[in-house]
Length: 303
Ligand code: ATP
Ligand code: MG
Image (cartoon, rainbow, N blue to C red; front, top):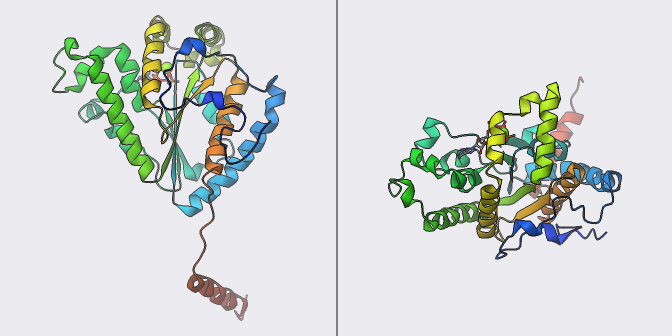
């Protein structure tokens, strides 16, 4: 396995959606596991990455130069929550915040769609994780264009106004937004956890069968599942138009949870590694002050 640090896709380039690629999800194998045979085979990389991520986060926090924004999008039961939980186990909660985006509130709807996203952005030195994101605006809203009517957009008076151009402009707005973040020091990674329709059914049935998992299931999830093909089209178009050098998409096979977690962990760790983060270096003046403080401590009479 190639583990060079100058390439953050250290084991498999095929997970990255290169800018300009027209995505066809039929061509992506949802149970692909790359160079790994099984869970045990990937465990070593996952544990090393988790440990290294915790070290890198410490430097990120201390150096206050970059923010890190990690976006998760997926169909229900693909494993967003579990992936976030596993990959971030070693991370210091002080420097990390997870935000889940649900159906917009009336207050959110009375602003433009990036308003609530802006408010949740990570500050310098921090890692922000979005469990769903502004991409819902070109995914669930694309599948249910009637949601747009609640947004009171001047150009959308009826569903007839929701044209292909409308979505193109939304992609452009999103790209510009992410470019702005990038130019100001935000490192963006976007993950689509790509589960198959068959695997989703299996996981739904488990959620229904096991009382401790019932809370994760909503009958509405099965209704949305009926719109699977429309969702896949929306994902394909969104990823095609918004995978950029400054905010790349990764399509992560999600049928094997162990692979999904190992892959996401390695991409995040590798990306942070590629920043060449360093602890802040103090000026000679500051070092002198620290030394004076040490001398003062050592010279205290009664302690
Ligand atoms: P998840 O399914 O992510 O694990 P959950 O089941 O706890 O979370 P849900 O009640 O399903 O939470 O909330 C997410 C729902 O909100 C999804 O159906 C999602 O598509 C919807 N949603 C998120 N953002 C928007 C948006 N901008 N417009 C409309 N619906 C949205
Ligand atoms: Mg849900």
